[in-house]
Length: 171
Image (cartoon, rainbow, N blue to C red; front, side, top):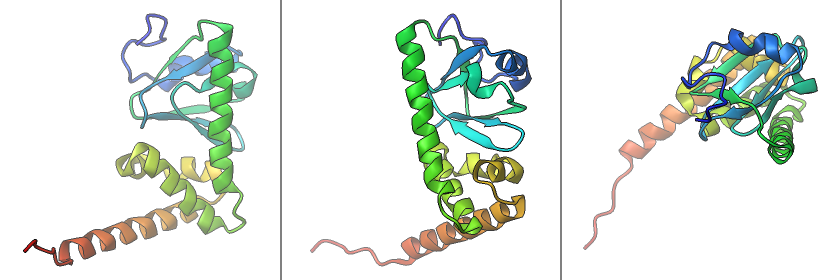
């Protein structure tokens, strides 16, 4: 990790940096793939992954930070790094927008559940609060709970079928 990271320990207390985000300080996410942050604003939430910009004018109203995996924040060391971080943040917003575009709430809930599971793993999805995921795609927490149960049941059924499937043996 960078010597400029706010915390050399990759797991940090989200409240440590909340005040700095609200004051306009800009950081970028220092994490390996599969780890991310969820930034909760008063009326929505966003998920951002490694090298994405956090803070600045984007997150002045951030009310809560939820780390997903091992994440730290560090200062962008140059204009080029800052610009690249904003581009990556935009990519995360665009990816999330694809899930939000569906007019059916249950499908939005399913889409964000699958998106986060593909990126961060199913354990991360299981550990996240329904309220946090619901805020990302604008659905009720109960809708997230229903979608999560349905997706997990489908995965269990697929795993069961794969165990029962006969394996072809070579001649």
